[in-house]
Image 1 (cartoon, helix red, strand yellow):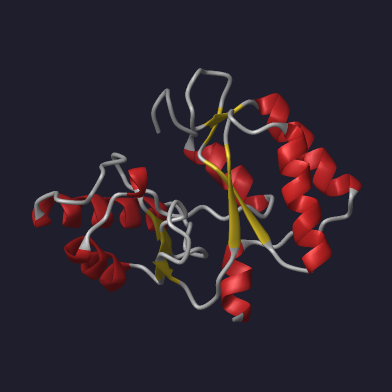
Image 2 (image 1 turned 180 degrees about the vertical axis):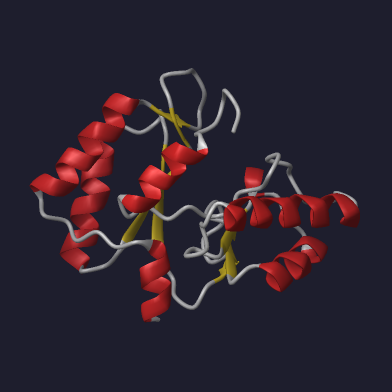
Length: 171
């Protein structure tokens, strides 16, 4: 709980609304090349933070900065149900493959709508990844206005929405 992150109450609200809350690091440390003790502490604290607050459904680790190496993967696989690096297609250990779209301030609503429409036409799931929902400048941010427009569009086209944890449970 910091001024630059969602509060536990906000995370619980998202969880109640059906969002998955997955591990993405405790201090957002890039893990590739980090000493084993740093990696272990980062993974253990991230996992403990979520479990202590009741977030046990997701069980995935998503790498900060898409940064990992063989040593990191070994440690993640001992602690989490799966992992994913969405920046590298096919990189991950999940029982099912998903197309993903990293939502950020470089995409237009029309580009996002097109990706959603294509997934609907193919009868495939599309994982929409939001790193930060904020009006602050930054490549990883999605404005609250764009977020609301995306949610409204998903509703308007009656897109079936499923949590990642549910898709994993179904596989």
